[in-house]
Image (cartoon, rainbow, N blue to C red; front, side, top):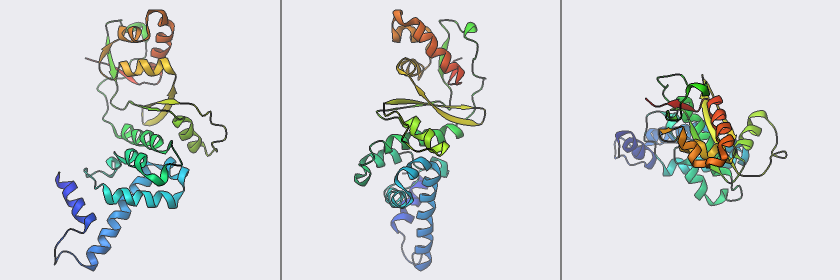
Length: 234
């Protein structure tokens, strides 16, 4: 256990001996717990909206009690929150909640991801079939049996979920300049995106879809370039 996690565990569990522990420590401990819960609220606003602030606050505090932070940066807290939500019995009535949480954590991490050394490629004509491409450091992909991108967008625009098409979605998270967003990928686009999770030649995308799907592969690759999801691997 790292130093940050060890200290956090001691605070959350009250595992300090006298004279360290006492009424003042209990106040600090409660403030610490509430601070972590607020950090979750900031990282998972759509999840909070879907279940309501009271439900979210109770769920967040249970997560805080079970999961001390391992990083000094609050933006990193919540890496396992989607897994916790998936196993949290009271949330079972909202089966897509955990996947939305995974999408939102990906958005936070994409925002704070390190900058790439080079600008993203934009001209398809300059990329050869043997050129090796990979995800940019801010790129993330989240697969779901639910329309998680549409749900997230509805939250962002203040709309209800009545107009959401309830089908599975694969969410592509990208950062363009300082703007982070999520886009829904179709089946071919999701397959091509997975190809470049690790540095791979462009021709691998054609192989993944099959030689008879060259137009679909080209369209998918063009969209990934437009969304600035890829970098050329050196």
